[in-house]
Image 1 (tube, protein in one colour):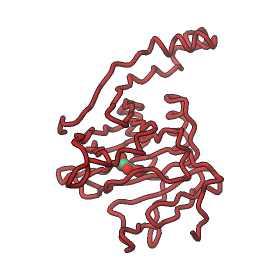
Image 2 (cartoon, helix red, strand yellow):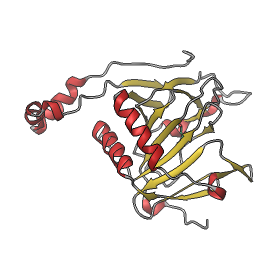
Image 3 (cartoon, protein in one colour):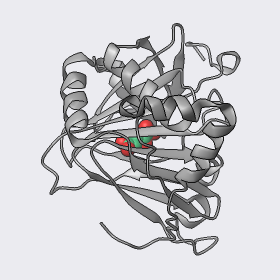
Length: 252
Ligand SMILES: O=C(O)CCC(=O)C(=O)O
């Protein structure tokens, strides 16, 4: 992985979390039930101008392996027209597989497609609860992208649809092949660049969680580029919070 970019990594401060628990009286119980209390994630802070992310390992290798296999069994991906997106007015097949799950009635609209949420599967609920436990944020929807190998990819975009709760981070869980993930500032993408801001590049590991906090998606595009050397499959889950009143109707 390239080490370019304005990446600032800070150590986690688990003391703060313990202090918080102490105030709410939950620490005693946590200590008593030490075996059942998951250790706090050692978060890495990733910051640049208008970019605010937290990155850490959410699952052990063993658990991540199990979840990957369960998802391979459970998730139903879109086919046909629903597996296409609109780019400059033309419909194209997406270079990966996609699926959406979530609370009843939720629809996510982007790039000319409207994807209705299927009912949560047990594995997706388990992963969503783990993300909530680690972050304190709740989510009602997940977009799943499956990249069969390094040829599958996702182009530069921002997750800034109006139906997303702007105060809620987007929580991205990765399972399977490690892949490079690139952020580029909106004013430093194309020549002539309005300003010189270096891209921020990360490698997203098996079992990892990347939290894209606001206002990251306002200022930064992200992509998962082609990596021909990657021969194995990766599944990515982006947990989101959709605000019901702001949803586009299916026929918009
Ligand atoms: O696969 C990934 O890590 C990125 C997915 C993504 O960009 C998205 O869901 O908006």
